[in-house]
Image 1 (tube, rainbow, N blue to C red):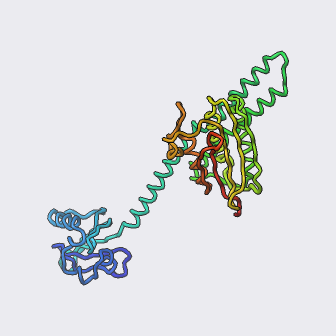
Image 2 (tube, rainbow, N blue to C red):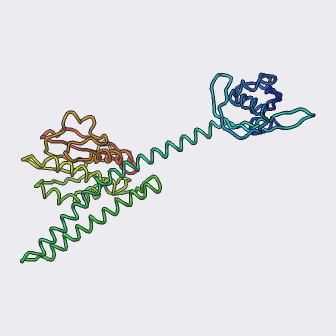
Image 3 (cartoon, helix red, strand yellow):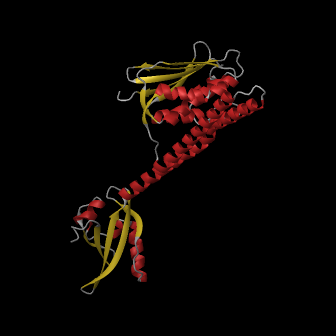
Length: 343
């Protein structure tokens, strides 16, 4: 019966000497049964042996507890121990039930690490939420102010006001999509992806930042010619990346005389599509080039330093890569690549 038991079983006498041990218990500690019988219980778990002696002296019944076992090679491992007293032919015997907790501890540690990683991601997303919502909320305010000014003009253009209100409504919908993505991630640990035409996704993202570019007198050229361009992505997240890159480009050129931006796509290596956002700004400072995509790295006086970090996380979660390099004509080129669907 002892040898067939799933848990390890050890029989001790009242002096703490091992009278018998199951094969499972001996294996847990790295011994053969014959190496343990007749020896002191302390060779397997010193802490339990001392407590066992205390219990014998005081007559206190044993309780379930988690302690460390000592293997033959000197390594320790977590065990759960329950000792019960039995009477056998007028002799006091103690039956120790032992369970190896190593697998459970590894599982618990893995769960804790997963929870910690997920909480860290959620924290980072919450930190970045202020950054991601700033642009659409700013755009909503700009469109509404523009519509209000037109309403006060003598030469009222109803069509223009309707266009501004439609643009504001689109930005409200975008805010809702960003929040929905965050809710999905918190609830399920992931966000949904589907086949999308990257050129169309980028074109929509460019429309989101048109008002900002015009406000800063930035001339924008769109060259989305890559074909095929179908990728499996979360549309809202990739739009966030493009908006981040375009907004950074616009802000980088605020004090430049030449303010030109180009957004383009092309195929590379046969199975990847590359998107570039090129500006004519001052370029990247040498001291932050290597840390550009790290969290809280920024060149802006009032920047949070999370936009590029979030962008990198999004692109890498889509099995892509993002980087920055100098623009030969002056300025910076921010690029990312994504795998084409089925390639």
